[in-house]
Length: 136
Image: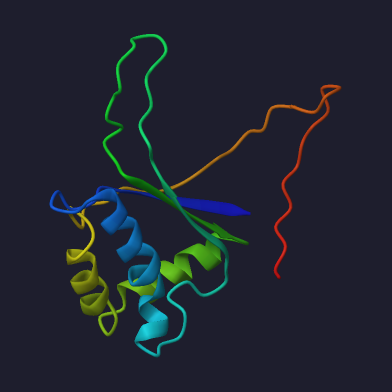
């Protein structure tokens, strides 16, 4: 499984509540609203994680992480990930995506990454833990 992450900063004139509302109810539903096939073909999971800065226990200050949202998408393969990127970049779709992003993000220059993950054993007896994705 391959995980993609993207980092987003909201527009400066938006509250966090407005940002979350627009992302969840409009941007995340863009393809459906436009009557198009999914923008994320073969995606296994699509999650938005909205950041709430907290006090750093070492410094006692709240430090701006530089982003308001981390978006994660899980793919079964690198091929599925790359195919989805081509769908999003399709000249027939890209203008609508970019137009919608103007209502949401501070910029189109948002980092896109894939991840290599290592899990530490966290079970009560030191055993490995697992996460299972299920549909339905």
